Length: 254
Length: 254
Image 1 (tube, rainbow over the protein chains, first blue to last red):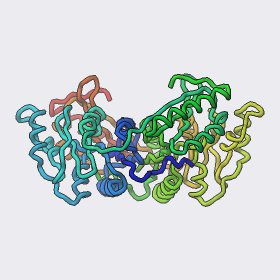
Image 2 (tube, helix red, strand yellow):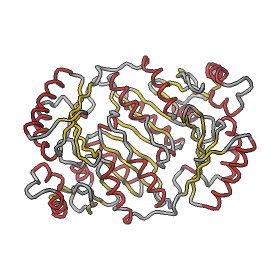
Image 3 (cartoon, each protein chain N blue to C red):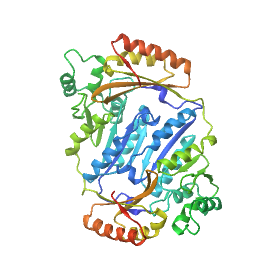
Image 4 (cartoon, rainbow over the protein chains, first blue to last red):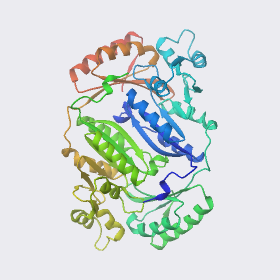
């Protein structure tokens, strides 16, 4: 087992909650987790878990409560629009035991986006924000996300989620950036597994992953090294490439 | 809130566990959940939850135990290869409190795939299967997945996972197929939210979702109706289209 996967003391962690029946049914392909994973690496924040959950109030409440007590930061996506199935904000208010209130800053954001008179009752629902929240700007379609303590509530539409996420990175305090090195090769995992395992033992502070793929009907493997220590990563990469080459493998561009 | 999201008595449910640091870090985009979501719909099995978890033994054990007690079926992907970070099979054996054993059927599958003498110690690791498991065929690269009670353990590489999944559908006993209707429109959610909410109240047995999207810089919304009752779905679709059209909306091809 790979001890470098465990949470270390002082490490800054995150949990991601994807809210929406459409992701569970396969109708919508989630791409928000992968986006956040990459961005949070650079900030030195490691996603430890992600859950895709349905639009069920009690499930949202229980999951957010568990995550906010377990991880440094929690990010949710989905369910903050104007329709009947958008129940995230009501659920978050219950999670924090506060009221949903008409947020005047959110109303101003909607007024800027919609034509005069365009904010009907349904759209006004998007200004219902849990009491005490700090808003997250939505430059694309007006209706804001928001932060409650260590929980960041964002839209599910990827284009909006990304802009919201990019707007909150200055609120996050991470650790050292996590650096990823990738070495791709044409030989099978079974050929180098033993050598790789020895390198993992020698570099137990670095997380090494081995990920086979099929591309254009050819088998290949990506060897991924992740750490905050650039010098150690560079050392390991040299040894890894030597090990693969000694076994007759070629190194591809990743 | 959308009561049609709750688990109903007698409903056949599933939970999906995606095992792998590479998905959490954003390096790998999971596509297995969406594939299974669509396939299970046709079998009348509804995915209620999915978790992406790291390669940590205790996390795998706890998650699988929780899921197998909660859902009719559990599907895992990832971590059954030959390298040091492939810890799924050892973890599943501990979950079921059985030994990992050299499975003779799995050895034969490996022998069929690899050239004579090509099965070294690392590759032989892929024949380590929890005692009592029923194998799942891997037509692409030999090393099998397996079933332990209601838990199906599959590869993470999508091309392999799909073939494994297609090979186990005759082991699954589902309910009535879940049918999905989609109506796409060019008007905003805020325009029809009130009318849609009334339709949801009238058709409380049907799950109605409203999913905005941006495509080629244009806003649109997909209205997705899901149920096992085709007649009710067809009724609702007619009323939904009438409602949208009355509001001046156009209906797009989905």
